[in-house]
Amino acid sequence: MIRFAFVSLFALLLAEPAAAESAAVERVEVPWDVSYPGSDGAEHTLRALLGDGELLVVTFFSATCPCQAAHDPRLLELHERWSGEGVRFVAVDAEANSSLARDVREQKRRRYPFPILSDPPGTLADVFGARFATYSVIVGKDGTIHYRGGIDDDKRSLRPNATLYVQMALDRLAAGEAPNPRVGKAMGCFLRRP
Amino acid sequence: MRRSTSIDRRRGGGGAIDALPRWRAGAGAAMSLIPRLTGGALVLACALAAVLFLPLRAEAQACCAGTAAVSTGRLTLHEEALVGLEVRALHGIGSFDGDRRYLPADGQELEIEQRIFGSLRLFERAQVGLAVPFVQGLHDTTRQSDFGGGVGDVQAFGRYDFTLAGQSLRIPGVAVLGSVVVPTGRAIEDAQSPLGVDATGTGAFRTSGGLALEQSFGRYFANLTGLVGRRAARTVRGSEVPGAWEWIAAAAVGLELDNYLALSLSTSLTHEPAAPKQMFRWGLSAALPVTYAWRLQGGVLGDIPADGFGLHQSAAFGLHLSVMRSWI
Image (tube, rainbow over all chains, first blue to last red; front, side):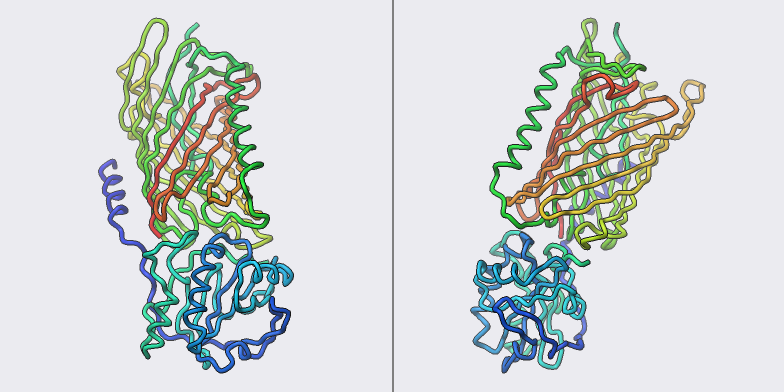
């Protein structure tokens, strides 16, 4: 028994971290024309937010999650790097206890240059399979999900050597290649549902 | 009058009671009641001060590691595996008699335990773990002094979360817990030391199972655990020692601070109707992620050295500190 215990613990020590998953190309029925109130005071549809862009990055947002707050700089960097290259960004507050008033405050406080859509029923979270804050999807015009999962593999603090999933996916898409991985693990808090 | 000195190391099925070792026999130090209560009050005052004076954002939530402060070795949200080492020291301070009277000890008893443990997530809602303790005991009375130890009782534990805390506003996290303790340690009847300091186990298989409920409310979290345990019958020098049931109820509340330090205050009530024995224990612990993969957990635990808080049980006060390495 003791030997078994040691062998088990040793095996755990040697175990590799869980790798990001690979997955086949997915396509979902994106509710392009459903309107959501935004933290900028306007109503938005995903189609309007995508506009003439090629890709829409949808990040699921939690006003109270410390992991979300930790990722704000990285989200802003992504926006700065890619918004001029046909990539549009939007955040979605899909928590059941969210409010538009709080999203308005949070967008200003975090200086997001894109709106936070208020979606307390969580319809967009259901469509895109979001369960955790910071979960992001890169969706194409035709509903293709090029990438879904965490912004990176960080949790509550940003490491310089983190694997930048969204950044990597956008780099590959810009080079005409398929993202690898297509699925990453999201490390944020649960998105609170009813 | 000198009381017996055996130590009963009982571990429940993971969860809150995992940090609740149980002492059976009377023993202890010649500490007065007042200093002990003052020590406990100081700990609580420090915890309250931390809550009241540390900078807290108005709106924040216990993200991922809050419940880690409640139970050592439990995988937090997103963790796939961990290994750790816990060091624990328990100082016997007295015992409770059959009338629930607290009697300060007339000697000194110290138990030090190191525990290597590991946990592995089988799938999102299920995790299992194994803990291997190494126990050392020191007993010092006016007439005798002795030191001994060895490998303790190995414990396997697991939990399955039907729902997870924080996932829903209305439905709390609900988990079923289970544990098996294998008598790999030396039972008291096999001890060589007259003071029993080399007894490292209970000599019987023990199983337990139960339910845990937990929920987070912003940065605060709460946990309720109920367990039923069974100690198997065994034979000691030709005599049959019957098995026994025990009930354990545990509760914990805590919060996660802006620097991700999680603090928790826990209590537990253990009741063994057949004996009958009863023990009330409290604990204050903290968990702090040090790096991406490493975290520390530590705290104090103890029994309340006052009449009415125990029955046929020893009373102790202790410290524990763990270092854990996790994989995401």
